[in-house]
Length: 198
Image 1 (tube, rainbow, N blue to C red):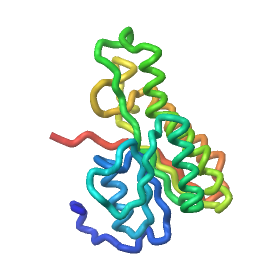
Image 2 (cartoon, one colour; image 1 turned 90 degrees about the vertical axis):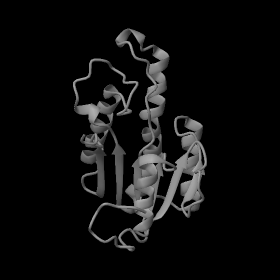
Image 3 (cartoon, rainbow, N blue to C red; image 1 turned 180 degrees about the vertical axis):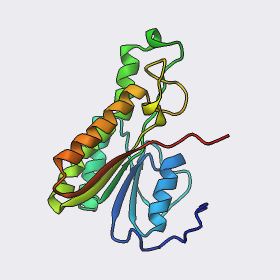
Image 4 (cartoon, one colour; image 1 turned 30 degrees about the vertical axis):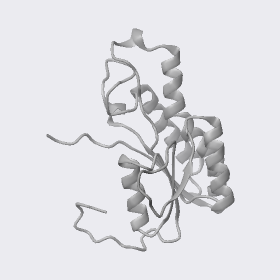
């Protein structure tokens, strides 16, 4: 693993922690999964396709945009790992065409809801109870800086990948959960990766 940080990695930083990273086979998801693994965590990754290279992480092949895929992930995690300590919602995307508001059909809206919102909703609903029972847990939503931008179209065909309208939902759900479970050792956050500087 390559890192630009000058701080040495602690191989036991996440020892004993079970970490789920959705969309963890490539890109940002793979980097996140690698970081947790190098910190000693038990890492579970999910994706539609198997990783290109063999890794020591636990892999669950499932389509997170479907109810069936989410059910499979939840079932395997509860049966094999008896719950999760840290959940990273990284999976998502946008395939909207250019052309403005009038080009965005109901089908495109539904597709983006299925890819960006419902995976997190379903996994939270299935795995959060075990965190509550244990009295601790961390849930992180990888979002987009477009949630803070003034966009001229409701959906964006180019990266950052998540539409602003859906991005707005995730931080609201994050704040709501933080209030609901404030008495527990439970943390929830929405992260917005920044664009690289020229």
